[in-house]
Length: 234
Image (cartoon, rainbow, N blue to C red; front, side, top):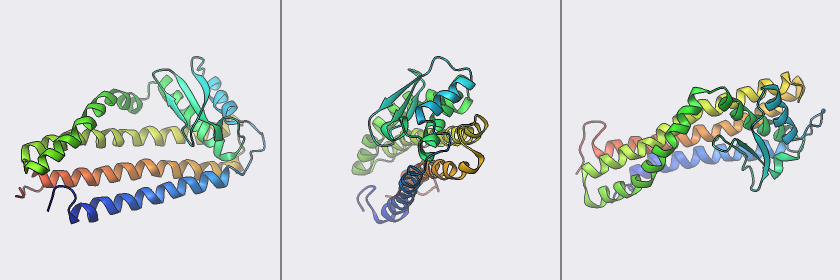
């Protein structure tokens, strides 16, 4: 069977990955759409909510800005910029507050030198190199039936899995901070936390799905290269 497009790859990697990713994506879109229609009583916008958390944390060097793209919200530790999408920046919905506070949580992690965030940032150049050469090495390894090339490609691909693994505690912690601080700072009431939890928990599942999908792919490559199971297929 040619390379990685064999039946085992489709059944053990592609199908489970698509199912997990599809479920996670559906949950995110559903929860965000639902709670985007639910306004908070205090009426803070996403940008205001993020600023409140930054101020309470004593962070004065992070800039909050509006960015284009659906759910393109992110925090850039290099430029210390907290970018909020159109759906979040000016909205006072429960969903917008959850996303904005989550991104503010990343800025707080950065200011507090949260170890997993530092590790993730340090891995960026490694992952950039690994992801850039893994596909080439794996493709050549399958075409040439070369175990050494497959092994090298697998090792390069493993940097992506490692990055996604480190990302999990970073995202979970940012959401935990957001859920706690949004209530403590008076941005939302205790009874409004349920909707915010639904949005952030659904978003967290996308990272879990991505990690599991990549892990399945890595296990497949490990078996094909003979690095796992001690079986060297011809």
